Length: 299
Image 1 (cartoon, rainbow, N blue to C red):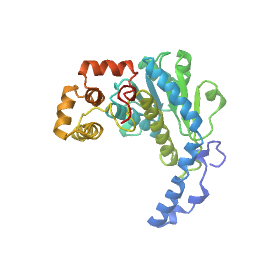
Image 2 (cartoon, rainbow, N blue to C red; image 1 turned 120 degrees about the vertical axis):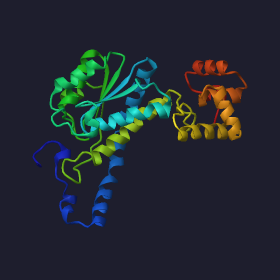
Image 3 (cartoon, rainbow, N blue to C red; image 1 turned 90 degrees about the vertical axis):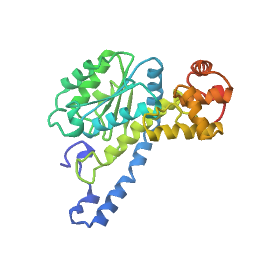
Image 4 (tube, one colour; image 1 turned 90 degrees about the horizontal axis):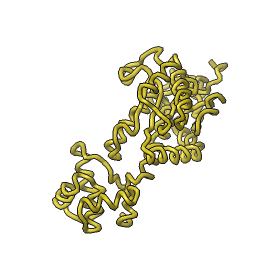
């Protein structure tokens, strides 16, 4: 296996005796390996920042962000996409995850689903991807045929393209992407199990991509989640607490204000801070490009 060019397929000498280890020793070995992940991601800071800038532009132009992956990579893309609407109040179509094998592969491995590049291309066509959109191919090993097929098709369609990988990717891939984010996480504790360090690095990068772009769109005020959707009791409570803190009002007043704002925390803040109607608050937010700091100042 050491002859494989993919670093994620190399054997890790630090875990070679892990089958003889006690539970405490297994934890120590894995924790030591996991500590290296943040540095691997940090090595890609410039590339990730560039990707955020591109994604922000895509969103402002009305385009969408697609993640494409197989196995763990696909599941992580779907996870990140599914968490954007409740966190940032974004349309579910704005960020989408595509996994080789379709929805069943989220819960159970679909062997062989990732092996055909034409399946990746077909998945892109099914979503109607166009030159206003952005596609991020996620392939820990850098070689997944499904992901490569999707990237090639997106490139043909004129979409912005990116790749997230944890081992060096080939020149035919880097030549067709706008940004290559390659966090070299090294051999896994269990050889080839990219759900471990590679998966952790991927999750960190995806967190930055969508969070960074959404922040740039004005989905936060400082570090407050002002565009969240109060779709459950926890998020309703958070909405009220944000208003209580930022507007110095009671919970009852926060509830009343939130109702008057049509459930929008952002609109409620501007209404209260500026002493204006819901309609005027929404107008001023729109004029400010979604950034309420431009309307009411600091949190």
